[in-house]
Image (cartoon, rainbow, N blue to C red):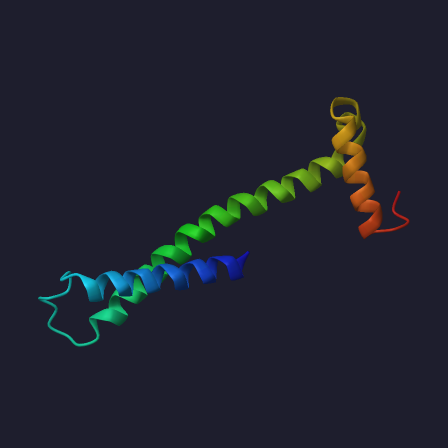
Length: 98
């Protein structure tokens, strides 16, 4: 998931650099390399926002696995199709566990 966040950061930085070159946002900037400043800001913003969203996804996956390990009988009782699918996937990844 970090690679996805890194790629999104790079794309966001590139878009920020494109906006900077096509608009006059940094016209009063006293330093050179305003494009790289825009890239850095876009990169950080994209990386942070995507990392937050990916952490939510990672937490939900971890929660599903922990809850499956904690209460497989309840999961089987309430959602038999999903339980069977998850058991098949788990057995294919870890043969001999069940």
